[in-house]
Length: 417
Length: 87
Image (tube, rainbow over the protein chains, first blue to last red):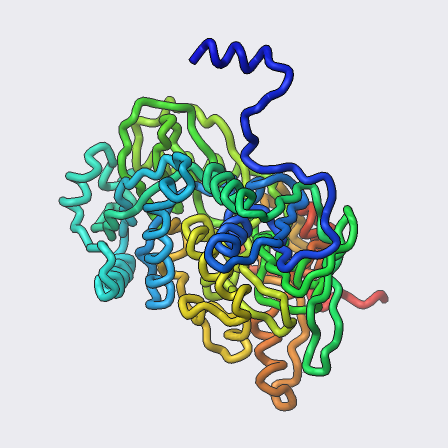
């Protein structure tokens, strides 16, 4: 291997293939334009090329591949949601996740850890039982544990949580897992690229051209900082930038943007196998393959279109971490960052067709989008290719608010990543 | 520490405040149809920019209006609602 490396270094040409091709210019038209080269957008491109035979695709991103919320989440994958719509949808996603490394021929470091959602109050225990029963009904491995069983599973945790939030029990979800998040974007990107899709970074969408059909507006093109593209189909998968894109097609939505912050500690010896979530203490934590503790908390409390970090966040999350694990008091925080979460009133996504023909939305992914990456790609590619919402996303339609038919997922989505 | 100025209590830490959302005028409930009412209940103008928002100083329970830029988190004027008329 060192000889090969030396030869490679001395070579004038670097024959090793890149993950994906850099295209010098945009074509004048594409069958589908996907806005947002994050996990969701690239997954949709991947399944469009692989399963639906649509290869003339451009994936545009105003920044770089996987640089948005795909690279900013805390990588937790689970399916123990609350509504039947949510549970079936996320269950399909977990199934796709489990085969994804083989699919890509790329190691995603998919690691099944088990996922504990701690309950510190009777009300929380009741929600856990509710979730467990809904989950079991759909054959998902999910059960309520009492405090003794939690203690045996996580002996290093202070079961009284500093004396004021004793753990009464937990919802345990054995398939709960973590994965390398950037590898997911790269895997989907490479797969889509090999099948003919073009990925264009540093390409900002400035406007979307519509024409009036008599029965409502229809997409005819996309204007970018690198020129105009003619297309009949646009998939918008831009998370925190969704309101700005919706303005281009004159749609109003309930989406509001809040920063979601996260941080990691310095690497320490492996001691925490499962993923631990506490909604009462606003903590979720897992230990990465590198030994860093990956930690997150609840949303920032007010609307903001920014990825700034705050000391308030680090202070309060660290304090709650110490309530659970007092022995971490000497561990340092290495990095903190934020993503822009596109929140919806019912904590379920907004996906599928819109009143603008040819404009498809994959949005409202708030703080819960990473785990849904594969199934979003799968269902949105179906939706775009057939111009018909995939059956798994019927509960998440854009028009549900106008009909007062919400899909209440808050009990399972907030602080429960 | 980020500060916000309460019109009654003066500058206080932002952690003492909660945001009550943008100042909006409801449509006439007698005249509005379901679609217009749903638009009022659910939809928001979520574009970044300077907005008038309801805020509450929680220790004292004072509700007031703050002008805040939702792109930069810069807080401008704060005043009680309705704004006092010039004398």
